[in-house]
Structures are given as structure tokens and as C-alpha cells.
Image (cartoon, rainbow, N blue to C red; front, side, top):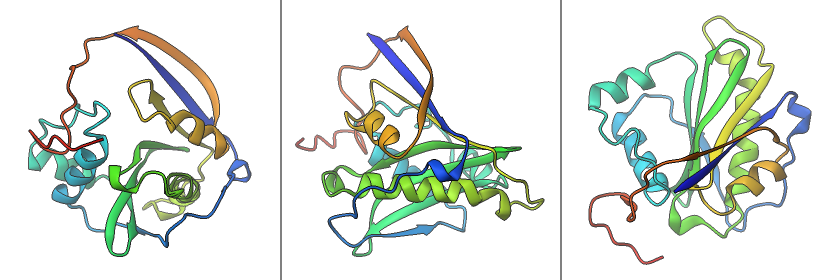
Length: 189
């Protein structure tokens, strides 16, 4: 299968475009304590339908080591106390923050939460440098998405003020069935 990957960035926090308010009340909270269980839940619940498989084989210790790195932050969106989506921010490289993972759980799409969560993640990315052990100004926020991700991912990123700076196309083997949040979940779509 041919897969296209788009790389997008911002070079100034003034480029963030907030967009419409969510259709339901939402609270975005930083998961301040590293929790492999929470992070793996979010990763599989959001990415299970989009071929997110690179971390499925990670051990508990690999998750813990990853989450313990200074500059790595997980921000979780909650609707009525229920996790609705998340953003994982990686500010471990001086001067830049990558939004490594971002998305909503399937039951929360179509409520204008994605744009709200993304704008919030961008704001948190731009201020992440102030939360580092040695404060460092952020000069660039970036992410990538691909043709395997949700159908509105690229347009949401661009609508929030990220600009395309590179496109790559490759051929790769993709499973015919997505892993879902757990084996044999078989959710209706």
C-alpha cells in the first residue's frame, strides 16, 4: 500500500488558530505522574483504528522509561470525567517540541473536540520549555500525520495554523484489519 506522510510545523505561537468551541464541556489536564497503564490505554484506544502499532510490544519498563524523560508530557481531554483524547508532547530536543501522538477516542469524534484539543496541545507545546529543568525557549512545534490516520487529521492540523513543510510517499505492508484498542474488540464503526 502507498502511504503518504505529511510533516507540519509552526514557528510562532501567534500562528495558533483556535476554531469553534467544542460541542460538549471539556477539560484538558496534564497527566503529571508517569503512568505506563494510562499512556498505553490512550495509545491503543486512540490509535487502534489507525495502524498505531510501533509501541504495542513495549514492556511496562519501556513505557516507564519513555514517560520519565524530562520534557515528555501527556495532556488528556476529559468529557464528564471520561478520557476523550490526548496529546503526547516531546520537548526533549532543545528549541523544539514534537506532538508525537494526538487524537480522540472513537466515541468522541464529531463533537468539535479535535480542534479544541489540538489548539490546547499547541499552546502547551509552546510553553513546554518553561517547564523544563533548565528552561529553554521553544522555537518550533511540529508533527507528522499520514494517510493511515483519521480522515480529518491533516485538515485539522492545517486549520489550527500548522503549515506543511515536507511530504513523503512510501510503499509499506499494512494489516488488512486494524488492531483496535485490544485484540478482538470488533467495535462497530
